[in-house]
Structures are given as structure tokens and as C-alpha cells.
Length: 329
Image (cartoon, rainbow, N blue to C red; front, side, top):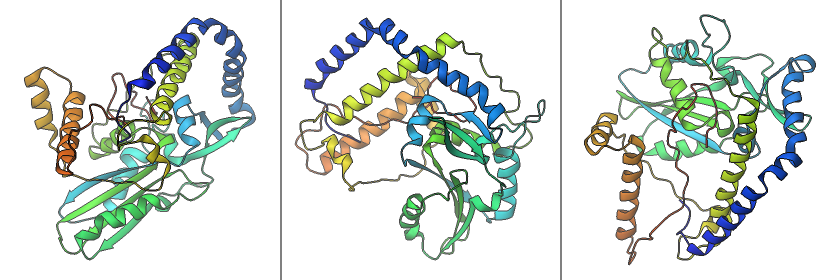
């Protein structure tokens, strides 16, 4: 979470975006060679660099320049059979192939990031081995979970390997409760697309990714999406850079201090029932839960009055999200 909202930055954002809107066609003519160059690279890459995969989208390219690692935790009940789980994840997700074309559904799980002529591309691992992306961790006490999870997230990815890793956690204190930790670089995809791909491996008989068709996107629409990302990127910078009033200043993000909180899983059925009862989306219920918890935390910490608004990143599923690995902001 970032900082308390300040109305002082709002006029600046409005003026700047109005300026961009009025000069849109001028900027389009000015930047058109960049789009043409990007398109030519994507077409010529298979001919001159057959070791490369697809070009990263704008959002993924932005994340590729950073060191943002995302962690997902799954709980397991019963006996932990690591070889069986590895085979299931490999066949149902990592090495899953389309029945019609025979191509990998998620080739990015076997690729890492590299640059060619100024742009980011995926590049195939020299020899992919599932074992290089899997670890088995045995803990004596459950209270070491959070500490070990933080260590796993902070461990850098190995070079020339696809930036993801499974850690199977076995706890000796509770023999029937185990965990699967999955960490990945944000440039691979957002939390929704990656977790959706992994959960698809839970049922190998009926996999929803087999017959997913990509909607065709025109060249003009791709250009407009590029400018839309430019507007979005400025709004993000506006929230991060401009100072805020109050103790929750966004400039604290530049320091090494951070706080993290984990909660018990919330049954999705309960959230869905609430969304149907009040006639709102599931995302609205989730944001309301987080907002209410933060307000209660402020009051518990002795805040005289919780801030009216807090800027933050909300990894919520957006409509029409692709079933492929991608970043959608």
C-alpha cells in the first residue's frame, strides 16, 4: 500500500492527460516509426533468430526491466507425494500441448528473457529440465513458514533458466498439512494468468486451455493499446512520485522497509454468494474485504482517523483476460 491521497496532484494529472489527448495525432505520427520497427522485429525474429520465442508485450517488457517476484501459496491435505505432483504439474501445465496443433500451450515456462535489437523477447532454454525448477523443503516447525517463504522469494533466479520455481514444503509438526510455493517473475504473466494456468493442472482430463482461441487484434488497435498503456503508466508514476500528505507517504517505497501480511484462505463460494446477494462483482467484494481490514488495522494502531484514500496495486482479474500467460493492466 502506498500513501494517503492528495488532491493537489489531481489537476496536474488532468492537465497532462488533456495535453496528450489534444496532441494524440501528432504523437502518433512522431512515434509511428517505433511501431513499424517493433512490428518488423517480431516478423523477422523467427528467420534470423530461431532460438527466440515471441516478443514481450508492453506491460511485460516494463516488468522485465525490474526484479518483481510474485509468490503464490497452495495448501495441501494428506500425504505429500512430490514425484506425482511434479508429473501432474508438468503434464497439465508446464509441458501441456494443444491437442490440435501440438504446440505448447505455455511455452514461456521453458523460456527466459533476452533482448534483440533493443526489444525484449522470450528465448528457449538450451535444455529444459523440470528438476531445475523444483525444490523440496522439510521444516520441523510450522512457525518457520513465513521466514522460509520470504527467503524463497528473495532468492534470485538462475541465469538462462525460465524465471519460475516450485517449492514443495513438508512440515513435520503437522504430518497431514503441506504446501506448494510457486514463485515467478512478473514479466512471465500477472497473478491471474499464472495461477489460472497452474490450477488447470488440477484436472488433466478436462483442461480448459486446449480449445482457447486468441481473438485477432488489428494493427490500429495495437497502436491504441500502446498509447493506453502510456496513459496508465503516467497515472502510476503520478501516484508514486508526487508527495502525499499524512504519515502514509508513497516515498517510503524507495526504502528497504516493508511489511507483509498473510491471512487464511477465504472460501470463494462465500465471496460469490455475497456478490450475487448485493448484485456486485467478485472484485468489488475482494476490494471491500481488503479496505475493511485496512481500516480496522488503522484504528487498532491508534490512528485518529483512517485516510480517505490509499493508493495501491490491486491484482484483480480484469474482464476478457486471455487464457495465455500475459500481463494485463
